[in-house]
Image 1 (cartoon, one colour):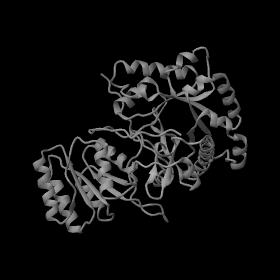
Image 2 (spheres, rainbow, N blue to C red):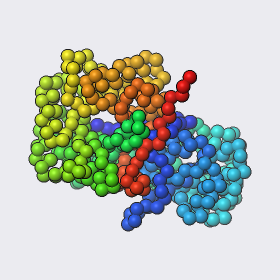
Image 3 (cartoon, rainbow, N blue to C red):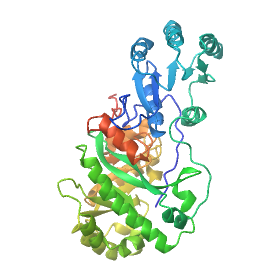
Image 4 (cartoon, rainbow, N blue to C red):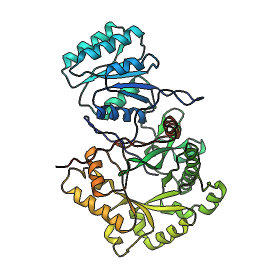
Length: 425
């Protein structure tokens, strides 16, 4: 199973395309996630910070000014307040004083592009109000700065640690779980699917990524993990459908594991309801496809009978070897992230990315861009005709309960926020 890298994103940022303001109240019967109020007149900054918070397991509410936040804090008490200091510093002072009068015990994080002296002055006003004032944050800042705040005050999901365990140990102790990353329809700007990524929830180290448990894994353990990914995808799709969301699930595995899986038996045993089942996509790498393409094509035809489609991952670098085929039985071709990165600004990379997207369409497949981290790249991909996108800008992998919570908070829908459109000259 492949790992998901943690990108770095400088601010000022773009309109993040998935996670918007969440309702403060958790669904009945469930523990409320930590809550953060974000106050900034710039919606792009609010959404960027909100996206990072959501990815660390913290709910958010966004406010364009302190007045709106002060009204909300009467009924809801956040664990963290992040407040921007604009030129109108009086609004921030009134917010700090209101928090003091309320006896607010959470943390307050001030941020601004103004001088350090202004920030320190505002911080001292907070301290006079006996508030817990965090070290001031100067704009622009990176993603890691917001994540550090969450980790330092111990809210949300703990950060991954550099631990090392075996896959056998993780499977034997039932530590394996699957986190879900949204796949966004770039043109319609809405949730179109979900990809599952394996994690191991260690009792001491917390959630571990595949780098911690996949190296050196035996073929038998890898096969067992692949089987769990399919079963988990069926079950998760059923859970999502109960909220009125019918999503096509994606998992990734090696072609060897795919051929060894008892697919017919798995589908029969777990019997996904056709009314709730949008199907399953299994990603296999382009390198593995090219090693035995005719046999892979036969496998794709067989899987299609069970409502399972194949997709080519890391697509593009070996496309010349596929040129002899007019069509291929792959529902998606997921662009190698090397083509996606900087496709909106790099004059060399942009035409290559466009060519690879056209190739995917020429084969009758949807083009999926992975690793989207910048708004300029998202805008360019829409212009190039790319169908779907995944990446930090659109939403990072999250535990299933977190994904379900967000769906519930939105009444069974999780539309994407605005993807910035290319401005006409």
